Length: 618
View 1 (cartoon, rainbow, N blue to C red):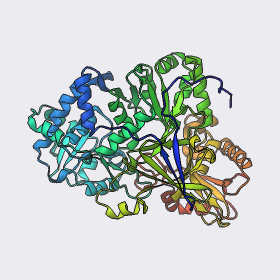
View 2 (view 1 turned 135 degrees about the vertical axis):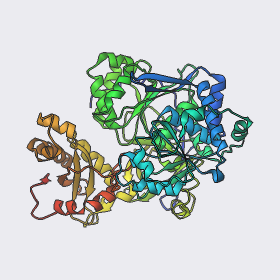
View 3 (view 1 turned 90 degrees about the horizontal axis):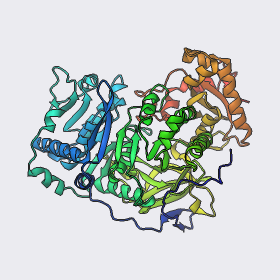
View 4 (view 1 turned 90 degrees about the vertical axis):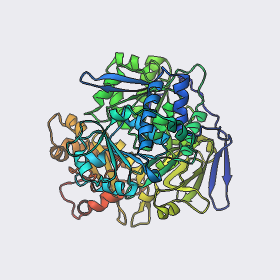
């Protein structure tokens, strides 16, 4: 890598890394910040009401609308008036037993307003991945979620778009709300009519009755370990997590109000809590990005970034790869993007060193400084962020150190540690699943998150932790050697860049490690110089296969042990199935389910002699 270490970072204030390390006789280590957690707000509606009072004209939310795709902007005062009207409409329903408000559609201004209104009415809001409605053929997962939550209200942005999903559900006794395009014969309330509801004193009384332990959300797990579970998110959890993040990166008096462009879905804890709640807490402006980190959809994000100068920008590595390529070709885009940028964030996977270096080159060229890359780690069950890199690190792949108020327990597990968490942001449990709740905690009350980690430097814990993959995905070869799936998968995809999109690691109880992998069709077409090539043509193309072989051969040369060496790959044309639960709503691959569902391909990968579809690496 090019050495940019002599160039300072753009200044960001961080909490000092002062960590207490408890080392137990059995090898268990517990890490804690020496700083106590600062006081935090009682509930999220109190934060919205404060900004509506103190900065009423400031813009809270914006989203492109209409044929001309112009920005519709909503101030804090305007939003509060609408949220109160929606709250009254919900209170008028006289919902028993605090049954939730289920939102099936994606991020929108209306989604945000109804979500806050549900909290003010003391009804949990339950955002559900649109994939369960729009990508599924049998709506099986949606039906399971519907039966679990038993909602009182269901909201959709465009009712016609969701008609097949809605007709798959028994809507008896449920109030359906649509923003636009109602379905004939399907009774529903117009969102606009609810906005016209006159408020009474009942709204203020309901807000005053919200307690820190009031359930604010049900957030669904991704289903990566089975059927999605509904995680109880209390107001205390969410507000404490906001304060942890603010305390780790203290806001300075001269800091501009945050301006954030974000696409991350609010049904996911990172988008709905770490992203949405953080902007609200700072009184900032959230521009809802209808783009996505794919070659087909990122053009919308680039259009937005040509108009907006974010103070903070986060994306997954795939999104950064497309953004950086665009920035390298467009000086005007660079000028707008870097104008007010203070910090960058990444998540979902480790950011490759190449992307880190290329972004820093651009930052230095346009600001004279490097930009700090920030990342965190946690789960839906922890509201979500429990650790973060709250210092200017040049290393990617870290998960950082615990926030104030979090205890991180490290249980020895081979060469790594199994990680567990305890603190005010950890869930009270899974909704209507006491069995799963009991199994999720150890004897000391630590949540067993299922991830592994290691120290950057065991002699200096303050250097932070490295993510070590999912404990539940790891397996042994028939030699007894452990294979750490998470780290190997990331390394293999990076080594084969850019021809691999994703992969699962095989080899349980076998002699060697292999991959079932999906090609990156866009990259393969570029390599083949055939813009219209099909996925089947890419899989059979000698140039694609040779690029894959060369990249993984270089990976193998860097590792001597059998646990990290890949012997063979089989490329797949069939995409991961959401109905088959190979693909979670977050877009992650379910390793265990995919291998079970594609057992015949695993057999073909290990057949002797290997078939022509198998790519041998060594």
